[in-house]
Length: 100
Image (cartoon, rainbow, N blue to C red; front, top):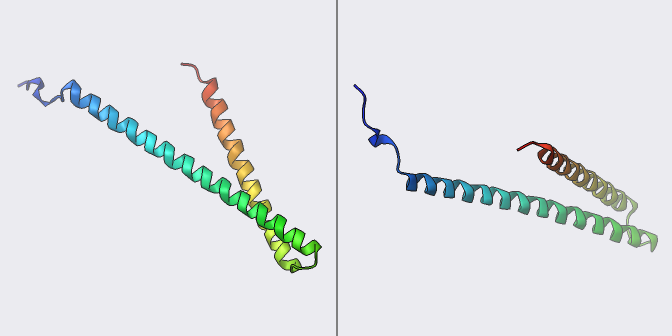
């Protein structure tokens, strides 16, 4: 026997589900943006620390080992930031090439 269509949700329920999905996407986008912002801030902080220690070393006020560690950490952070930037640009270009 064929049952009626009573099990199908009304269109208003579907619209609220779509709204919830869009809200979740916005929240995910905000979380990604805050993560990228935090990573960029950490990278800048490491670069500034390495620069300050390098200047202290030139004045003879810093340990050479600390300067090398700070510069290597800054270089690693910068390389990671560049790799992330390249992946984001690559993804954007892939999306822009898609046909609608």
